[in-house]
Image 1 (cartoon, helix red, strand yellow):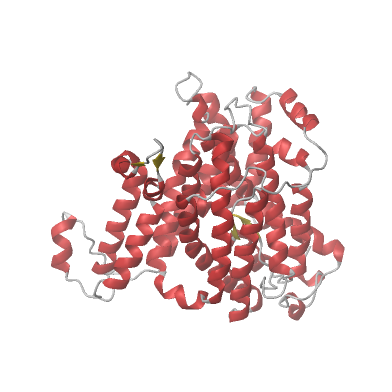
Image 2 (image 1 turned 60 degrees about the horizontal axis):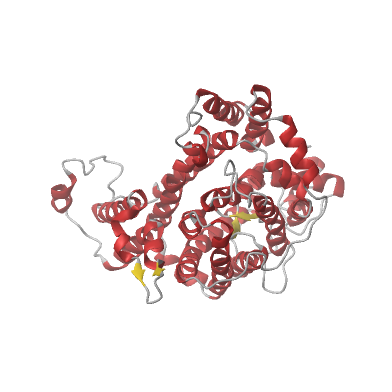
Length: 484
């Protein structure tokens, strides 16, 4: 389908243009295919951390199906808020919303080993964090100065570094298999490698939707490979399909609602990062699709939709939503700026979310196959953070700020026991883990350190002041230390 067959050049740049339905629907489904795997992966990771995910043999394993459903359903609802808008909520632009990876390092320590019981506090944080995110729309333009590429790039890199361990564990057989002979077997790794090889082949040797949907296609090929070599039994697929309902509505407060200081603080602080990411995506859409800068109204509307979409998702058991950057690239590739095309994709996502049989098939994907996909995805998160850091003026001052923030943040992720003293015993015999959870996320202390130091430290720092702590490795590339 060529762009000239869809509309004129002027129409293609117009967000309000509506292509013929038989052309708009396939274009909308393209957007869903580009983000589908990324959208449902956080639900799978959170369930795994809580203890009822793949391979857990937990009686609560069926709850994963519901979490997958809600990921699809409320990604569609949040996308509709962006494309159609309700009052000031929504940018009226082709912005695709989906479950955010950014919050995973916050969610994992909140639910770790707690099963379904850990979800009440998590979703309480999602709801309040979402409302706070919407509140940021009132002054989003005035807080951007506090989050330059040095901070946002560091945080995105930290998100990726926190997740890469998950990808390796999945590829080896999943956390429940640790300590068994099957963990790390060549058979497990063969399934992950099939996904990685197919994904890379499509990314580098094809173009268009084949390239954009490379991870999804890689997972499908890996799925059939797993069936062929016996990792997955066909009876498990048909059984899951038959046991899943054909239609089901979401249930408000299915897992309860609980106030948790760690969850609320964590989600509210990460909302700053997510809001700035959305500003970047909105600007990317208007520049790439319409050749203009985003208006203040569009940026505010997008931020409102981010926040209220997240809060609504939290009520029904969905995770935080944000704009998906890969779909910004898809708009630039197709040249179709129509928000109504993305509306078709949103409706498709909502339909998928109301049909549990779709989630029933997704939950039969072997953990090893998913591991191959997430190794690629999480590695790309790290790469995206490094790409953002390439915009930083790497003078000595910024090197020191980055060094301290990364050392503390990554160190706490790798060695959470170092701050076990932050668990305070309460009078009733329980403990308050708020500070411990926030610190061991690594993200929040790293971001806090980077923001505070960036605002407080003077601009100039001599070469000698860096040399004494760099062991001769402070960096002398001519192109990387501008502005000395």
